[in-house]
Length: 228
Image (cartoon, rainbow, N blue to C red; front, side, top):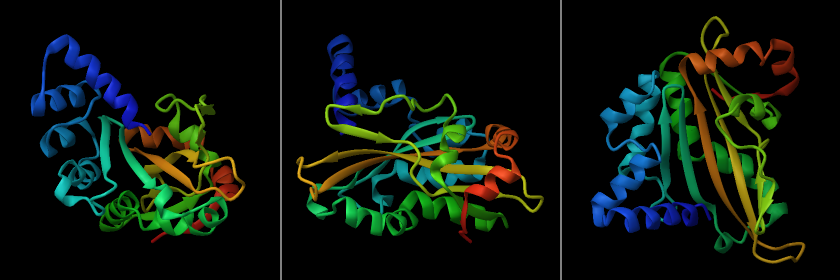
């Protein structure tokens, strides 16, 4: 679904610049803030270990599923944004009921979740899962959370679980949340659905700054389970 937007940007760029092929894609990616190499991605983010781990997604050969890639959408000093196009497809024959049964397993087994937990574990840190109700704090002004439905696509910003990495002093090191874009194949009650996901990883000083809003009491109320 999101690729339509990217294609529109790309087409506009081509009309004004005349670029084509690989250079054309690189120009579009640069405009979107997509790093062109692991070195560039690591340089753009203060959490070098997390940025290095997620930079493997820049190489298509490292994708866990070749038919539904996870793209690095943008990297800043305090955040890494990933787009999982066709995370669920109509052909998967998953409706709302089946998704409610499977979503936790799907997220836990996703490549971004595995990378995030692996980095935290290697650092000797704990990862805990929380309800997605904390996501508005996590997203802040970085993710537009005002869109509710457009052209049959609905946007969900509070989908669980949200992972938080804590150090040995129970201080927040990083956070991984995600939002979903859902579209149903038809208006029938049991219609199959498709989902695109945006994974948003908060790192460094920006992650630490969330601790003032994510108080111990609030996190206790939103706690789901220990991840590692």
